[in-house]
Image 1: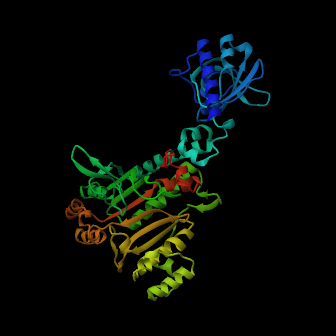
Image 2: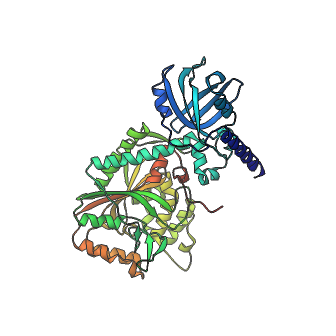
Length: 483
């Protein structure tokens, strides 16, 4: 800390000296060209005005060099003694790395072929009082990168470009859905009752109404109300909140894209996935084969994607006779396969083959689904908002879209029978019958068309398409424990 204060003190002294020379340390609006555009329009001897943060400074007597970065690129500035007034040249000597300046001058190509600007005038736009990371190589401490994202973005071109890519992906997703006739809507984030998923909500209080409220865990039930009202193709792209764990693929505040289509079903949603993701790859990423994670695993997003039933995957891993085994035999085989099982499956005589099977699926099967895969026909207990398969009421007509060993998106043939929906929600709620959303049931009783729906985890999608395997690398300000 003492070293940091020493640097800051020197910068404060430089700022005072600049003020004495007549410089305003924190300037006003400055009209200029962005560096990317300047490079495209570069011509020797042409006049130009640039602005950006000082990334390097090389003082060499009467000929001095600096590099600025404005977020669109870097550009070299040349400060020559005979091209500047005494005040401007003296002021240059007081600049520090991290300062933001504006510069006017003429383009010039150096003997080494580097496009440069010979500065005729410059102004100080913001004096940086904090010393940047050593040589602007970026923050070495990964946790500091997340806590101080502004410094990460300032010093790490790769990180900054990833977030530009995230914005472009979201823009193109919206454009794609609009082109298919979907309408973007907004539903409440602050709700009186959490619904649409099984998750622990964040709780708050609405003082004006004197009642407890929650932040939404999913927008699903409100979006379906819109289908009842005649808005047949809707989507919402926004934040959900779940008061649960944090790990490499989970953040309690996350971004979701939910899509609903009246008169559709699970297959309609599969078609959206197989259209949307290649569109994003083509328009934003520029390729359909992505190198994912530290291992640079190649994932091909060219459709069609594999479709396989949940039970078939289980049998492939655990044997064709799995579902005919006793619970004890299943438990023994699961352990032999290397799947650790939750303690509560073995205590107090609890025997839950369904949960045991799903634990094995989570720990042995899903993580090995690397290429894009629709896992279909899941047990109905897991998806109370979906319709049963016509040929087997124990299964529901849904998919989990899995890529790189993680679920990216569920998609359903939605339940539109209010009687069956009530039964499913009551079973899920157990003794907490107040968790059943009576207004949603009432909406279904008005008649909801046959419907397909899906929900894409936008953060995970960005992770996949930008090749990183940690969610905090694609969230600008991830939730962190207070330091």
